[in-house]
Image (cartoon, rainbow, N blue to C red):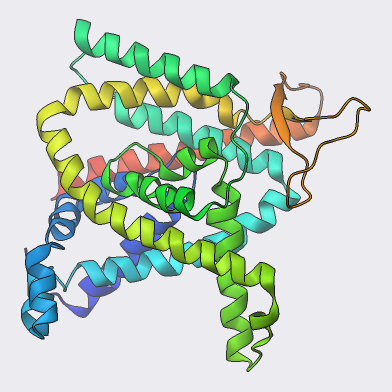
Length: 339
């Protein structure tokens, strides 16, 4: 790996981090895909694997320069900085559109997942009895999840830590979207929108000299959730880089097959046209959880009305979502041809 980078190289590393962070926030797209088509996936995994016992030994002994070079410090910190900036900015945008244009957001997500399936499957030439069977198993699991009652939002800190580990899977394994899995677990909005916005708002208030958040129990709980989620993400990023390196080396074809099947079967989870069904009591009144929100029992999916203009706008956003992945594929092919 290069130990010297120009200012322009460093700038583009931050930009790549911005793209990875944004991709990892969007269901159906993984930061790993951005790293893969951008040509720095191997260096990214290599750098993560350097965060190990030897690295911490160097750090604790005060050998900061050796630590910096050992973990490929000319690369990883800049990339992570870009991810963090993107993480907060994308959160505000998602929060707005989920509130104002929810159908279009899910339509774009649906399109991105379609594109992601194409991206993973297009170069997979290893279909045989074994991989087909594994792929069908992944498909059945995905379809089954689509028709299960969606998981309720869960702010148990141990579960939050687990979600953190899961959420970074998309950065280390191209094609597997960590944020998509958070949707299945019921904590996508809590962890990738609400808690991040809480930190954003807290920073904005502190800069103005306003420390009233200390008395805001809801805000403090959100910050605690985010801290645990971040700890889980950090642990997952380091540990999964080692685990997935082994899995991809020894079971790459089987892993790819099960991911293709699973994501395809799970498309029903993000089907844009659905109505929320809430649990009710014997009097027909909606049951509420501890936060005063209606408890979702399932979704009623339906085919859209083709005579409504909103439907065609949603179709447009599906095309946009798919085009984003096709664009990444096009960029990756051109990068290889010119390199």
